[in-house]
Length: 267
Ligand SMILES: *[C@@H]1O[C@H](CO)[C@@H](O)[C@H](O)[C@H]1NC(C)=O
Ligand SMILES: *[C@@H]1O[C@H](CO)[C@@H](O)[C@H](O)[C@H]1NC(C)=O
Image (cartoon, rainbow, N blue to C red; front, side, top):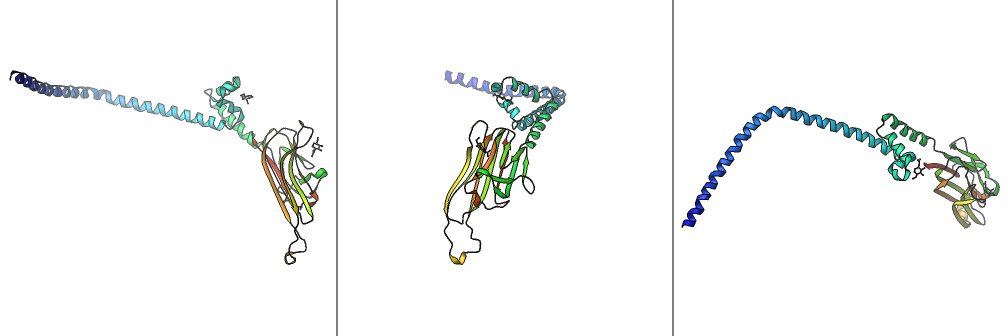
C-alpha cells in the first residue's frame, strides 16, 4: 500500500513538471522571435551575397577548366597532366595558364589551332604514264584533286618535312587479263636511318586469268584487281614514301582508279 502511494505521487508530479516545461520555452521563443526579426533581413542579405560570390568563383573555375581541357590536345600542355615527369617545364606552363591572367590563355589555344592548320597532307592521283623506275608508281601531284601541303613530291616519292604520326593510304587497279601473274602492291619507306627500303604495307596476289564464256567476251577483255592499303605510321623529317607495284605494266591508268596520300594526325 505504502509503496503504491509513493509510486503514484511522483508520477503526478512528473506530469505537472512536463506541463510547465512546455509552456516556458514557447514564451521564451516568442520573445526571441520578436527580437530576432531585427536580424533576419541582414542575415538573408548576407546569405544572398554569399551565393553571388560563390557563383562568381564557380564561373571563373569553369572558364579555367575549359581552357585547360582545350589545352590537353596540345603537346606542350600535355605535360600539365603529368607535372612530376616534366619538372620545370610543367611548372612554367602551369603558371602561364594559371592565375597570372587571361591574356596568356588565348595564345595557347591559338597556337594549337595554328598547329592544326600547319599539319601536312597530300593526295596524289594516277598519272597517264605511271610506270617509273624499279616498279615505283608515278603520280600527279598538282591540278585537279591532287594536292600537297607541307609535303613535297619528287618522281613517285612523297617527301616528309615534319616528324609525326601519319595516316598513309594507297589504292591501285590492275588489269590481270593475261597469263598467270604475281601482283604485289606495297607502300614503302626510305629513311636515312637505314640503307634499304622498309615495307610499310603490302598486298599480294597470284592471279591466273580464266577466260570468260564467249557470250560475255567483249572487245577489250578485262579482269580487274584492286588493292587498297592504309595505316598509321611514325615518320621522320626526310623520309620518302612511295608505292611499288610488281608487274607495274599491268596497271590500269586512271586518275581516280589509282592514288596515294598521307596526312599527319599527331601532333
Ligand atoms: C614533356 O615532358 C617530357 C618528360 O616527361 C619531356 O621529355 C618533354 O620534352 C616535355 N615536352 C615539352 C613540350 O615540354
Ligand atoms: C630507297 O633506298 C634504297 C637504298 O638506299 C635505294 O636503293 C632506292 O633507290 C631508294 N628508293 C627510292 C624510291 O628512293
